Image 1: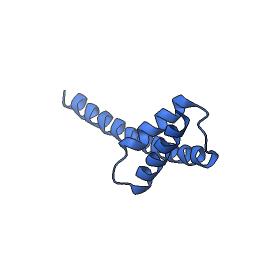
Image 2 (image 1 turned 30 degrees about the vertical axis):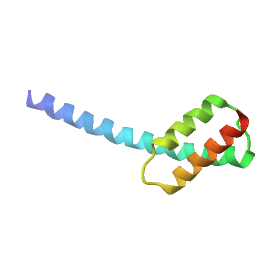
Image 3 (image 1 turned 90 degrees about the vertical axis):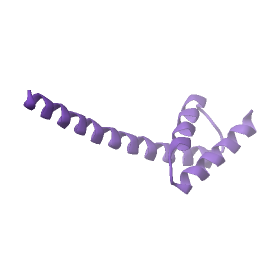
Image 4 (image 1 turned 180 degrees about the horizontal axis):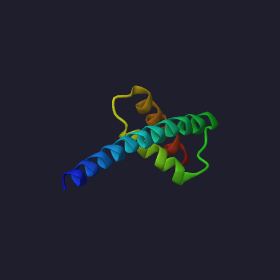
Length: 80
């Protein structure tokens, strides 16, 4: 019984670490794609744009992310 509990705790810890890595990778990719969209000055894929915008909006304590999100929203308003 104790072994099962220990294994479950280890698995949860591993999944937590994997989750952090995946989130950081998604955030990094969102920043790169946002910069590419802003450089191009146009939105080619609206679904991808909304996903990127959502990721940037939920990132905390990063002024660069806030600036990218604001600039993306400004670009989005120009195409509406």
